[in-house]
Length: 368
Image 1 (tube, one colour):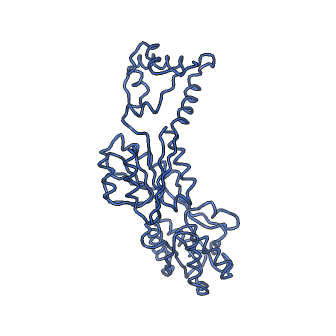
Image 2 (cartoon, one colour):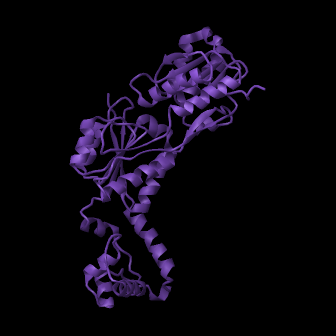
Image 3 (cartoon, helix red, strand yellow):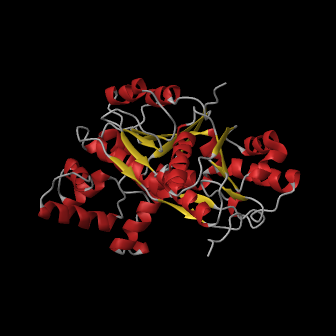
């Protein structure tokens, strides 16, 4: 059954306070000169001897005003401690100042830092953030439809969608950027990490530690990221002289890792290493290998995960894992979305944000 949850995080007021602080510091307004009542653009226009529309142009990113007019307006704003109202500005631009973010249950549970990053980025723009959380196996089409009904300005999606959903965004002139997903649709920008290529590094490291027989646990063929990481690992084994790994599909969570090892039972002893498509599966496998099978990690068997979650870094696990720079992925996605608002007809952009293999105590050192 589909799980669809919506959160709205409002940032306008916090942004106004932050902007007021920055503006006040930059123009060094003495406290005695601060007005008891907040100044308006009409107050600035009156003091500067210009029209209110001239004031609006001065404080608009793409507004045009002569040097003389700009200086007069800024001087008046300095005297009155005027702070532009981002909400009023959004109305004049015909924007809702709402941004939509779609993530899966897995991402919501395992990327809290990334979600905080998205909130931080939105706070800098003064926009509100609507977060839709969907089931990991579902397409995000319904979530996109609901966000469009709420008249969001942009959509950032870390879930799979259909071409029809992308077309809906294009028809509504709402920029859509995919994170860690690809779609053959010219108008949709994409930000990915090299999910397949980094798995070559995993295979290379295991080969240098003397591993031969390896097991890859994935989340099934319906999980795009899992499939990409599996493909990359198989290719990496072939490149670095390892036999093709055994493949076992399970649920994309901790219980899936436990179940995978339980299904193999004592036969898991024939493997030198277990590689999982994400950290929760790797952690489940790690606990089962240690506590149910009685193997020593990494002496008897090595374990590798993916995503570098907080739990993976706990000392009791010390899981070797792949770190994705989700903060910068979100920053880039938001940047691309707002850029398309200004230039809707530009060519599609697909960009990669590098990831990194982090070696910890669940894998051996390289063999001499």
